[in-house]
Length: 369
Image (cartoon, rainbow, N blue to C red):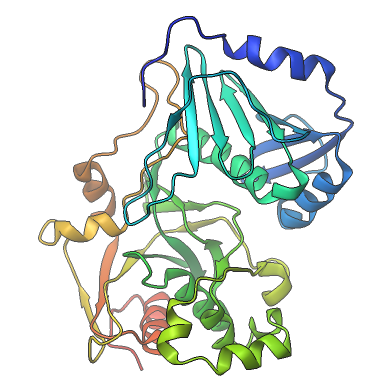
């Protein structure tokens, strides 16, 4: 992150005018395995959207570990010396800019004008929140991620599922289809733990993983090839998509929200599981037969990149000794207590799902059926 510029206001000086004038009679409380996050707002539409999105994780009352205030307004411009965040690898568009304060951080979304001010336990969201409820959802999840990382978890770029009391993380290099594979396993009876981020830690029985309540956002091909999700696309759009060449459908970047409760019923999004294994998708469309093999990350360290995940702008380590070890060695040490399975060769989600289900049911790594 960039250094703090001299003469900047403090976090409290920035937030006080907004908070002093705020009216936030509505509260949505989300319980993430004992970490309760309360979102306070005065906007009824935003409160309803958050209540629907987090419907399986709502908490009726009590104390909150984290409080977020979300204030509906026009796009906000603060007189701050923002620095642009470099795009993620493979991307070119700058989406976010930030300003580092002595006691916090300000992040601004360039496209929407949404502003997030956080640090020292304060969490303020300003801007057109109801039109960008997904960004408020992401901020809730990022507050949870920050809390768990500061308690010693490692951040993994993976989906997670659970079946027969066993858990499996699903990682893959960009565009490999970890969410699609997770949905296939859901259709085979698995519970959903997480879509794109897991928080992993060592316990007495091995590796534990905690999910993040981010609902899947999937491409059209995932919906068309899964009967449990096909209803999300209306019949006319479905016919249009089915008429596309396979290559065009594969490359099509149109994301659809797929709430777990709507497609698979209540109680299927569980957030915690033992992480018995990690599947790394390392295949390609023209790669020939599927290849399944147990691997050692000490011998294949290049595969670690599929699981390691940078924290981004919404993580701050505050206080001495707070934070987590982001080194490849720390990740390798964590994953040494779990089976690591590489699925390479050609793309075949049916075969990969069979391999994963067999592993979850029996603990054996096979070529699949």
